[in-house]
Image 1 (cartoon, helix red, strand yellow):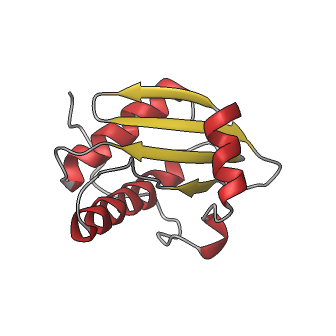
Image 2 (tube, helix red, strand yellow):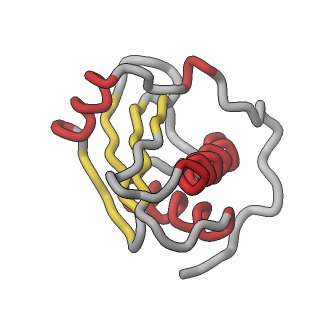
Image 3 (cartoon, one colour):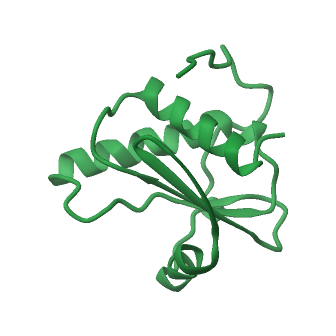
Length: 124
């Protein structure tokens, strides 16, 4: 895998706002059932257009991922990868970023997220 990550984000808000979270379990089930998907080694992305001018995202983990500390670290890394790349993404999508146990580092998570978004056609 290539690791040519951007050195810095463009001038934009680098926060992960509350409205960008997918909170409803019904919406998450709908994305799993009806969303398009792409996958790379260790991760999958499910996505579907929404009627909003921004992306919303959730970070579910598969059953048996590990103990709470591992699950929390994985979600934290995934949120940071999204924050890092959100200015490079097309808007108007609901996204599920599903990762499997394995290499949990920020660099590998960014590479996974970038490759998945390229495969899915979500990158600008």
